[in-house]
Length: 166
Image (tube, rainbow, N blue to C red; front, side, top):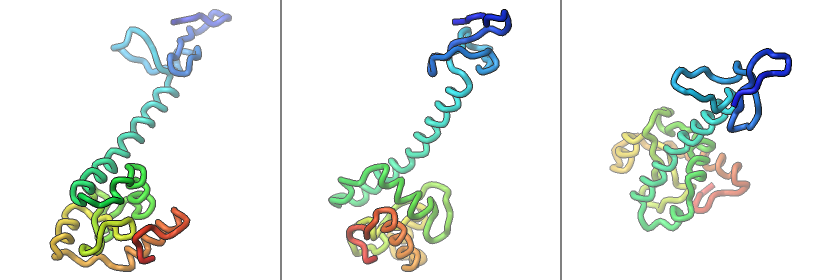
């Protein structure tokens, strides 16, 4: 929907998202569209929301693979994707405890293989490091790194996580 400005100048176009009339310069020019729908601000907000949604997807896949590996663990029934995202991003800063790498795939796994999976017994490793750690052949995960992660997790929660030694 186009409307002329009162002074006879530029044409105003209607943004269907924010429901306002704006000048043509506020919209992206598209050679494929015969109608203009979103202003630049609404398009940027929609793109930012899509980026945030895509960033959460690795945490969903991480939780799904963790549930597959740790069948029968009651904690994983209550753990949500947002909890995994907080654990990975806020506690481990999105990096492997051993190598400090942040490139995917990252895996949440048990720190002590003989103990049950709990938030206090979780460690973030790359997939290769986790495979070696599960077989007992990889470099040992430093206890200080896990203690630091547990302290950060306790700070975020306001108390020590269940099943932790911290």
